[in-house]
Image (cartoon, rainbow, N blue to C red; front, side, top):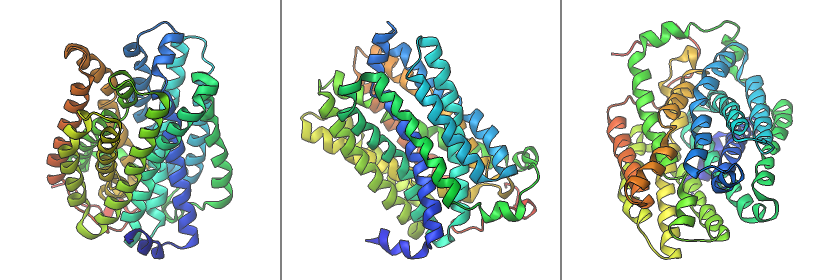
Length: 412
C-alpha cells in the first residue's frame, strides 16, 4: 500500500516525533469525545435539558482560540516541545476534575479551561511534526497526525461501550487523566524542532505579519469554520441521534462509532497521502464532494448494517479532507508565526462553529423533532462550502518550512 512506501522517508527520530504528535491529538480528542456520549446523563444529574448541557461543548470549542493564541506565542518564543508537554498535562487535569464537578456551573467552567488547553495542543504539535519531517513525507504524516482525532474518538467509543456501563458518566470522564502520562514520553524521547533551535529566542512580531498576510488569515479562518461545522456537525450529536431516533443500545452505538472512526482513520491516511501526489487543494476538494454525496445516505438510512455503512463512508471522506489540514495550514503559514498561525486559524474556526451542537439541537426542534434533517442540513452545507473555499485558496505543496519572516511574500 502507498502508506508503507511513504514510511521510507521517516527516520527513527522522525517516527518518534510523529508518534508524539499523533498521541497528543488522539488523547486530546479522547478526552473531548468522552463527553458527547454522556450528555443525557450529565443533564439528568444536574436536572437540566440536553440542549442546555450542550453549552459545555460550546464552551470547550469557544475557548480553544484563547489557548491557540496564548500557547502559540509561547511556542514561537520558547519552543514546541515544552508547550506541547504543558498543554497535554493541562487538558488531562481539567478533563479529570470536570468528572468531579458538584454543580453544572463548575462543570461548565472546567470544560472551558479544558478547551483552552485543548486549543494549544494542535498548533504546537502540528508545527513540531511538520518542521521535523522531510518535505516528501508531509502529506502522509499529515494524514497520520489528523488521524489522531478519530483515533481518540475510537478510544472514547470503546470506553463508552465497555467502561461506561460499569462506572457511569463520572467514572468515564475520569479517564481523561490518562494522557498525562504522554508527557513523560515527550520529555524523554522528543527533540525540539530544528526551526526553533535555529531561529527561536524572540517574541514574533505576528501583528505585522498578520497585517501583511491578512488575506491568508481570512481565507484560512473561513475554510476552518466550514471544516469544523462539517466535523462537529457529523460527530457531536450523532450518538444521541442513533440512540434517540434509531433507538440503538449503548453497545450498538459504541460499535457503530468504532466502525466509522476506523473509516475516519483510513480516510485521513488515504487523502493525506494522496495530497502528496495530486496536491493539497485537489485532495480536499475531492473529499468534500464525496462527503456531500454521502450526506443523504448517512442521515436517512435504516437498518443497523446500512446505518453503519453510511457512517463509515461519511467519516472516511470527512476526516479524509481533514487529513490534509495539518500540512496545508503549515505550508500556507507565514513562517515567523508557525506556532501561532495554524492553531489560531483552526481554533477561531472552531469558535465560529462552536454553537454547532446547540444549533443542530434547536433546529431539530423547529423541524418537529427531525434531528436527521438538522444533521444533514449542516453537513451538506459545510461540505459544499469547503469545496468552494478550497478552490479559491493557495497551493504551496513542498514549500520550505523555515523561520525567516523576511522571505515571505505578502498576499496578492
